[in-house]
Amino acid sequence: MAALLRALDRLREAGVAVVATETRHPGGVAALMAALPCLTEARSGLRAEAVAEGRQRALRRGVRLGRPPVPPERVARLHEALAAGASLREAARRAGVGVATASRLKAAML
Image 1 (cartoon, rainbow, N blue to C red):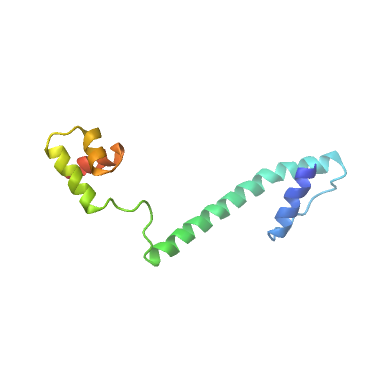
Image 2 (image 1 turned 30 degrees about the vertical axis):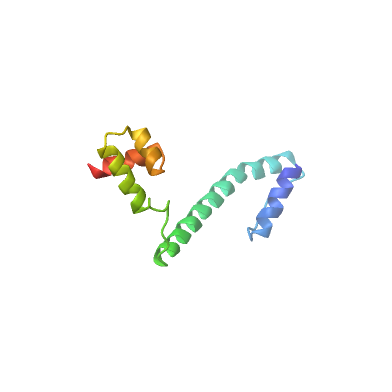
């Protein structure tokens, strides 16, 4: 019950008006507990919308999302090692990149 009261306090702090039936009666508590999953789903949807809006704002400002590109000198070292006949793992080690990155760069050069 304490967890329920804390959840209600957090909802109230977030500006959500909670109107419940008589909570001293077991039926009222059950009705409130039945409504909580709906509130959780709505909160999750609002969070997803906020994340999407933030991502769009960042893109409009020109922020690059994701990992930074591999520096051209590392790509060149990888290509040289592969051209010299090194295995993918060895070429990745020489270029200073991970094997998965080396595999992706190798596929892009084909």
